[in-house]
Image (cartoon, rainbow, N blue to C red):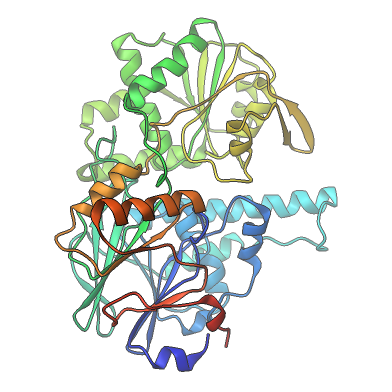
Amino acid sequence: MDTSTLQNSEFRLTFLGATGTVTGSRYLVEAGGKRLLVDCGLFQGYKALRLRNWEEFPVDPSSIDAVLLTHAHLDHSGYLPRLVDEGFKGVIWCTPATRRLCGILLPDSAHLLGEEAEYANRKGSTKHHPARPLYDENSARGALRQMRHWDFDQSFEPVPGVIANFRSQGHILGAAAITLAYHGVSLTFSGDIGRPNDPVMRPPSPPAASDWIVTESTYGDREHSAGGIKQELCAALEPVLRRGGVAIIPAFAVGRAQSLLHVIAQLQLEGALPAAPVYLNSPMATDVTSLYRQYTAQLILDDAALERMHRNTRIVNSAEDSKQLNQRKGPMIIVSASGMVTGGRVLHHLVAFASDPLNAIILCGFQAGGTRGALLAEGARRLRIYGQDVEVKAEVKQLSSASAHADAPEILAWLKSAPNRPRAVFVTHGEPSAADRLRVRIERELGWDAIVPEFGASVDLMSTTAQMVPAKLVVSA
């Protein structure tokens, strides 16, 4: 990046990810000669996006003084090991629960990346000889050693002159909005905004008083089902179980899996669903579920609800047990990662059960373009899994109320709860249509200035208006 541009502004924001996509969350903040990176996520979905993970980072990682994480999901944290490998030596700041979750997610991500490289080498399906993973488990452990945690609503100084604060956002354990203040000017990053009526997590906190806000827009162009996850999940599962089928639920291991297990346990207790066995087949989700008892202050669940969820769920531990599950008959429910059907044990279950019309595949969260989950949501009747075409005759349903992300009205309500009108809102972390639709609604319904930034664009935060510097004027050093 052109250092002369940085010297001309004391407080500057540059958008290095989550522009035109819901993945790759990365925001560079310069303040008084120091560099902060807010989020350090992986690009996911389409191949063109995934290839960005292999590109040279837009600024020298060794020039970054600190990283702050909104939460642990890989589209916000998953590039950290690579950043460390490339020279970042500063502190990674996050909440305590985010630190614990990253201790599960980052080594698992490294393991999966290693498996993908090994498979590509074995099948010869790579241009690179040999194919190498983006990072390995040693790199993931190295990133974890640089993490320091800080509690919600407690100010701290990640670099001299900048005051930071985490505010609870619901969404998942540890998820936070981040506010940075420098020389009287404040900037808030929403991170992923949780639901006001989530079945497990407490609602998000209102934004701090801010001159500028960066908001997500994952569901910026739609509303979730009015009936709620309990009603929608019951309607999806009940007919499958009644006809003796197998319900496969691809679920994000952090957050969604736990919410689904809780709601299923409630429905079975109430008699709304048959007492069919419920299997959790995700080692990561199992580890995450065990953390919930340690962070009950962030939950609306009591100890009885957590215990009921535990008793109602059969944990699948070994790979051998996972394979044996494919030999069982319905009715049964299998909750397994990954949520977008990009990898994990759920792929084996789809190979085993997707071709039977008695069964069902129930999608429960956002499906990024280019993933198998997105193909299923679009009506695909064949999926390429492990080098073979798998016919999809099972019923496919996508729940609109199961997401941990706020929908458009909920995002607007969160923004409106801010104690003051910001100078502008930057709309990121959404597909182009979602981001632009939310921009229009912010302008029309709140009367605020709203901008959908381009990749690499930057803005002088000391200015009273958003004077964007186009990406073409920001160059690599």
